[in-house]
Length: 77
Image (cartoon, rainbow, N blue to C red; front, side, top):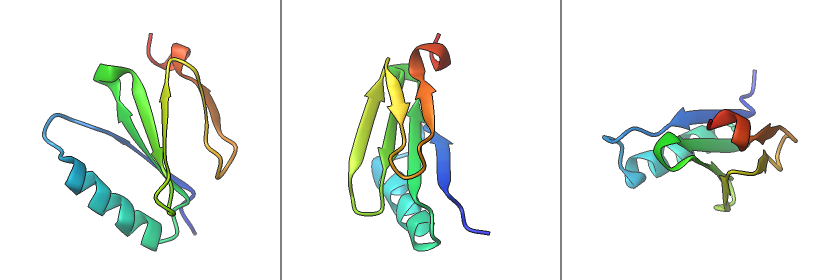
C-alpha cells in the first residue's frame, strides 16, 4: 500500500533540518505530500516531492496531489 499524504504536528523540539530529512524519506517511499502542522502559528505547510512548499493560514487548504480540502478556520478555533 502506497502512502498518499503524511501529516505531522511540529513540536518545539523538532528542527527544520530534521523535518526536511524526514520528508525526503517519505517521498522516497512514494508519499505524494507531507503536511507540517504548526498549531502555535495556526499554519499548515504542505511539502511536495519536487521541493514546492505551500503555506496555508486561516483559509481553505487544498492539497494539489490528492484534492483534500480543509477549512483551517474550523481546525484552528
